Length: 323
Ligand code: GDP
Ligand code: CA
Image (cartoon, rainbow, N blue to C red; front, side, top):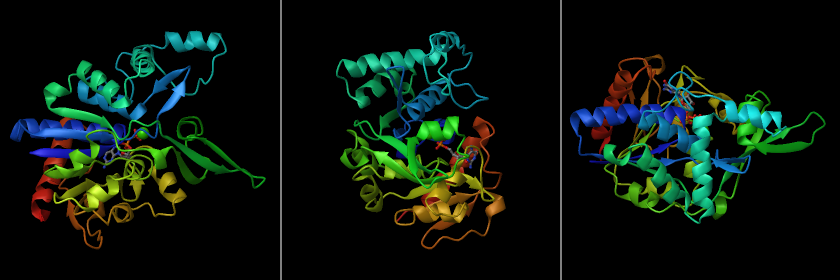
């Protein structure tokens, strides 16, 4: 079986780790291809940082800080403290010492002329993803950056990098819209459209529908590949009772004028979605043209076992809706 997933950072990575654990138990030969959001990417101190890809690498490769959900376990911050002593900015984005090695080697390889896909492939090898039958692809090799347009009190508008809004401003300043620089010129990375076309099942983990999944869907050709897919497309709600489990998906949804409900999120995918898995708290949710299933437990990814059960429910739903 070939499964293809679209993913952001923490929500996507945790779900996919559970999915891989479930597949290892029931179908170890199956192949998992992950198409990662790169709209969160940012250049800091001259280094290229890809937060969602790094969270996927560390989570699937066993190096994640479990409590935080991002960054490396056992991390220290000596380099960034030293950078602060030099007055280097910004300081609002944390880069630990172990994590910095990823950004250094990525930046070196990019400077040598490797593509983002090639660099991601090398990083994935270090984290043991090929042995787990996981292929990690950036959505595009073209640098793309999500910016957030904020309304100032004097009526003027200011655009800031997504990370600055999310991390420094904690998404507390209302966003008026998102602008994704470079997306119109971005071709899907090698293998991305093929992985969607050849999949037996396409999975949407509970990633942020606007700034993770929504950005990947904006890569030319991706949405059409999903619409034209013969394989069932099934997803997990990132919202429970109208609230994101973590992060600020509600602030993102409000910026694009969409309600914060499990049904409204599925509505964003209604042109290609076949099945939608919701929490028992959202039982009764209806989305036109989409088969909704209620997971038997809370849709909380508390540990790998609970997440594997959730993934099993999602794959069972995919079989029910197979065309
Ligand atoms: P990010 O890039 O690190 O923000 O991560 P993603 O975009 O992949 O995922 C963020 C989304 O994951 C948020 O909207 C959360 O609501 C959702 N999420 C996080 N943990 C859980 C969980 O345990 N269960 C569910 N259903 N959603 C979750
Ligand atoms: Ca992200």
